[in-house]
Image (tube, rainbow, N blue to C red; front, side):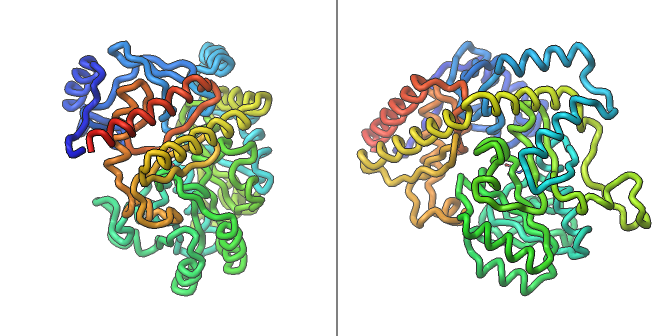
Length: 438
Ligand code: PLP
């Protein structure tokens, strides 16, 4: 229907807080994607698979903290470990054994990586990874995927939204985009052309593009990138900030059996606390050592920051990775994710709705009215009825299933089958309702 649907649940508390927030934050939010119509929900507490807003409404959460909380909220062993650590100090700003153990666990997951540096966010991780690629190859040009979101650093802010040849943000110094070039994923010829045109030091790519709506790189394409970067002496960077520890113990690279030169991680690894990092072969980090035996202009600043390797994140991360090792988290989230994807697709088919569902393992995202096969982000961005997705999510929120409208959802280890069946039933109702409204 043409009428913009607005949340019907009473949320006067959230509305009031949002009004107040507009005097504090630009547009009332500290992160633009958290804004949605008519106003964002103010969440007061979260546990298991549910969040509770300030008005006492409960929702089953599929946004899961920017797709960070694969175990769900307030997982008991994680909470306990964090509480215990808090009593011993939140951060020392010095090396600590917990942080070391955490780093060892992360390296175990990435067999190609021998060293790592922590950061406090995925943005910093990818920023340093690109720098490392340039410094270690002596080549300035970087290739990234169209629609790839690697955080907000100046270098990687280009080609996030279509049209991809346009600057994504104002405020970049002249020339930034001259050293970063975007290719459509799964397009080998486009990548080859860029290699021919530019002296490329690194290729950064998400194996599955989260902000790109869940479009995935084909395994053959990733293999091609691996071979091409090797042949051309460029570093291959897998941005596994989203897929890391989410899709399998060894992340996406284990799934496809490809060893990148550098891996960036974040989100799930931190157990819900701020995290980022980059991992790779020892030789790549040689000039990043504090005692590197190189002239100062050859030293590389890669990783670090005030809050890196803080014992709170390390503790939450370690406790989370322990659960991922000892419990059937991947089996459950994968099969539940598959159930949601396939049942949603079935509902769309049965009801004659032109939609496709993307996503992998625990992640799912429907796209309405795709006009082309969804094999690259351009197809998702230009051929998808985005407002239909927002509308769909709005109405699911009304029924108690929280999505960040327009964004990917995920199931967590604590999401129950009853909650999922309820989501699927509600999805069918929403589709019927929308069709009835014409
Ligand atoms: N890389 C990818 C693939 C992401 O999806 C994100 C954030 O969503 C980032 C990097 C940036 O991470 P952060 O938000 O922790 O800075």
